[in-house]
Structures are given as C-alpha cells and as structure tokens.
Image (cartoon, rainbow, N blue to C red; front, side):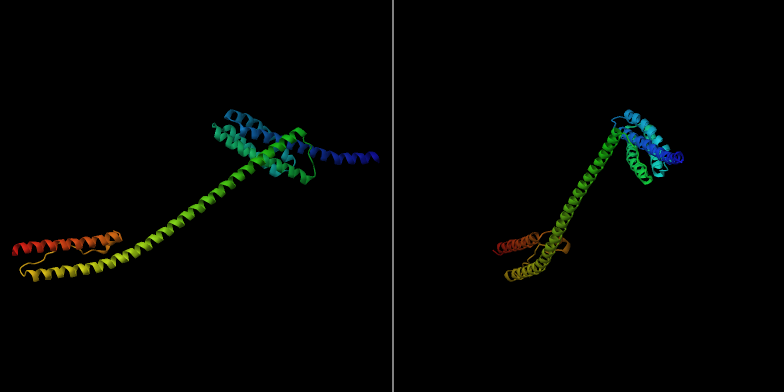
Length: 273
C-alpha cells in the first residue's frame, strides 16, 4: 500500500518538476535574449550590433518553443516578434537601421520576461534561476526602467518649457493686440480732428481770399487779386499724414496766400506811383 502511495505521489510530482524546469529554461533563455538585445542596441557599430543580434535570435527562438510548451501564448508571440526584429536588424546594412530593430527587440525582451513571470505565477510553478543570472536580469530591467523614467522626465521638462513659451507668446500677442487697438483708437481720434481742421481751415482760407479780392478792388478798381494757392484736400490725403502735417499744410497755405497778396499789392502801388 505504501509503495502504491509513493508511486502516486511521484507521478503527481514529476509533471510539476517538469513544468518548473521548462519555466526555468524559458526564463533563463529570455534573460539571455534580453541581455544580448540590450548589448546589440548599445553597440557602437553595425558589426557588434549584428554579433549580439545573432545570439539574441538563438535565445528568442528557444523561448518560443519553451513558451509554447508552457502554454504561454502571449510570451510565445512576443518571443516571435522579438526574433523577427532581431533578424531584421541582421539584414540592415546601416548602423542606424540595425540599432532601430535591435531597440524594438530589446523592449520586447523586457516585456517577454514579465509575461513569462506572470504565466509562471498563474500556474503556481516557480522557476529556480541562477542567482548571478537573476541579478544581471534585475539590473538590466532596473536600467531599462531608469532609462524610461529619465525619458519621461525629459519629456515632462520639454512639455513645461513648451507651455511656458506658449504662455509668453500669448502674452506677446495680447500686448501687440492691445497696442494695435490703442493705436487705431488714437489714429481715429486724430483723423477726426484732422477732418474738422480741414473743414474749418478751407472755409477760413476761402473767406480770406475773398476779403483780399474785395480789398484789391477797393484799393485799385482795375486790379484783380489772383491766388495761386490750392488749399482743398481730400479725405484720402488726410489718412496718409499726421495731425501736425495737416496743420502745417494749412499754415503754409496761409503764408502763401498772404505773400501773394503782399506781392500783388506792392506791384499795384508801384504802377500807381
């Protein structure tokens, strides 16, 4: 009876040991695949990249088969995708393109370790990984996590910088819009004043010209005052000049009109004498 119980116990224990060994092998192979992928991505030339890619391909291929035996479908698919990327890395003839596929395989390698660990936990089988290999794997994962963290901080810093620049740009645009509105309001008020000056100045100049003509007739009936000044302005001319320009224009017309009158009266006195 004891022999039968022992046989039954061993028959139940053997599948668990086999499953555990498969997970051991799968995790070990995945660790090697991840490590070689990382080295391939970190290499400084295409030859070293492809050297480590060869080793990574072999390890990923091994994981594919072991993951299938463990019924870890996701791990099997990830290992396949990582192997394809590494094979693509070997086919590239430029350093940049080769590293591009090596980087994708490295990222999938990290994901593969997580999937195998999760799959193992769900079946209740725990792999016994060599301590040195586990330490190297843990360091690799820690390095990858730190790299992701640094990139996230860098992106966050860039985001804050862009937000600051955007805010400064909005403030500048708002200030420019305010200045433009103030200028337009000031110009509108100035143009209104120019139009008023134009209207009054032209009437006054016309009256002055008429008075000079009457005075010319009074002083000398044969004389006729002739003005060469043109003091009529258009609205478009006012828009193209300042308020001071408008004032100066009419001041100059007054000067020209009075100067013409003085010359003609002086000439008339000389004839009479």
